Image 1: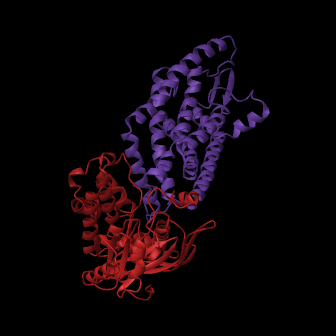
Image 2: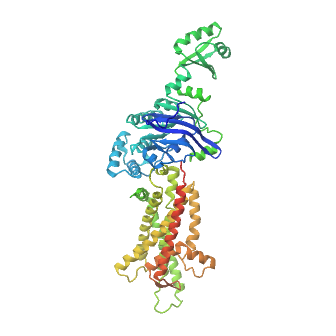
Image 3: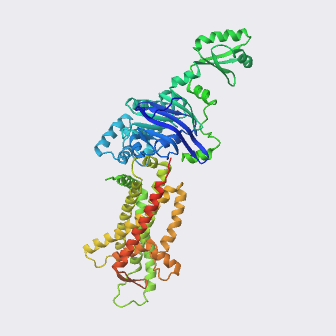
Length: 335
Length: 278
């Protein structure tokens, strides 16, 4: 895990030993990390892992209980006002007024942040073009599609030209095509120089967007690194096999060089190998055949974030709609 | 100077004119009260009162005139108590997180809601006054245009101060509650005693002692006293009771409303300061 250095001047977010509890339940349990200027940094974890709590402390909606956090160089406890002026936020739930138009929503935001008239009107035009809502400027929020609402919220988050943009589950509930377009917008915003902190429980999203990822579960950061580093730590490639005798095949392969781990699956098993899988695979096939094993299925793949998550947490990412047992506290912290 | 509250005001007024049914019904409702309850009751009361002797030279006013002041107050009460409901909707489904996460001082939310609520109440009060005069309420009788103007401003000052108090209260309740149903229940429960333990529809002098004390200190009574002073005059007879207001009475009533509003502001301030919406 990389150690945050608060004195590093290219750090946009520095969090040290942050803890946050709701009663007895520790939603965030001693986490530390830092986000560099210009980076897209992701919190990847299941629902209820503590991502939203952490983000709410950083955006000053929740009072910091324990630890230290600075955003854009300002301490969230001592200078919340400065933090608020420096950031943009896209909340997890839609935060729009159904009876207001696209333009009004942006105007409202600009006024809320005390932007001078001329500046905010120009900025609205820029952003409407950026998120391609120019033609929808006088449409009521209730008439917008899910993707358009999200784009409007991103535009709103960018109104004040924030140093850091916080995105809490930016593509939740959107269809695959819209999600991919959202990713393009987010990357575009980042290319213009905005540091982005996002939370997601989608592996592909973290994989596609992030420069660096922290895997978070049960309020703790389990691993941090670039997607490439995280995948490399896991091993090189993943080979999936189904055979006529999986148990014997696995024991045959136990001491096989270049195999780092064997993970049983329902119908077969996965091998995590330390070298290029294409080079290792012929040897494995020969070895199993020599042991009298009939191979029925072979699949070779580069590790995905799913594999990374399973590797670090020992389990598949929890499904949406299946919150952890302590759902009551999880619910109250959401609302 | 920080004018954050004008943003909240602007947005709330957009909603006010946009919800057409709400707009029309909120303007129509007081007129209907006057037209139905007012005319029905006044025809009865005025018949009952016909035989009762009045002091010579007294300024006698009919029941419609008497209760029209009460209807202005009632409308202001209802509009103001529900004025904070937007906060609850914003909290659950709308802009509250955006607002709370912005650099704007939270007091401006309270002031903004107060300002837009007062504006709505002014519009309603003026409509009731015009409609009341049209159907026969003897408001501003014998006044010159300048005197009418001064009286209207006086009424609006009372209405505004009263509305602020209940808007602050409404905001405080709304930010503390979870569901619109609960909010509606609490507010409906409150309107009953506030409305009926007041001099809106009848004199309070013959009330039982405890109810009378409650009614005397009820902000509603203070407001109606102010409205009657400006709309009818300092000395009149209605429902067989002789009403005399001195300027000191009126000043005390206004100070009472100011104190009430200040206390309600403190309540709202405290609720908003501790509000956590995530």
